[in-house]
Image (tube, rainbow, N blue to C red):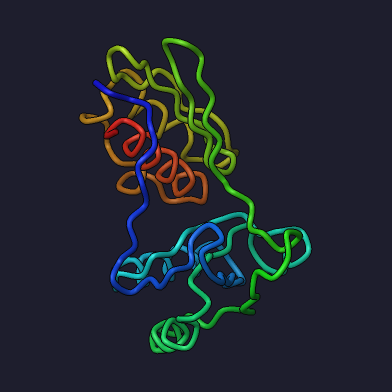
Length: 186
């Protein structure tokens, strides 16, 4: 199983040049995590190339997550969100290094194992067997259940955190799970 490497990002048809210095990016700031999750699902479902990130300290207003998006598409994205009643607290153009959103993913290689942390949740995988060996972090009440349901299973057989979790920790673990899937598919 090839586990490490990096995929080259491909732009969706709706994304103008705009990733990693190719163009302007903006940040959508929401009041709470639930709104971020709803907006993420809606925009990704519509084919938009967006990322959930941590907010830079300079603009932290609501929850601890923001959505980074192609700034050129601001009006279309806001129309979609507002049609669903998901009006962000603010839209901030990323115009300086201080306004860069914070990547919520951190990958640590421990030789036979690697760990992906997304926000405050960590998922550790055995690179040789593909078995999840640890789930940790967070402080939400469903973390022990998530860990008991996933540890000891292969990534392919483990339940998706989004299907069995109901808190911010479950959402963060889903992000870690998806990042592990992405890393394993390369």
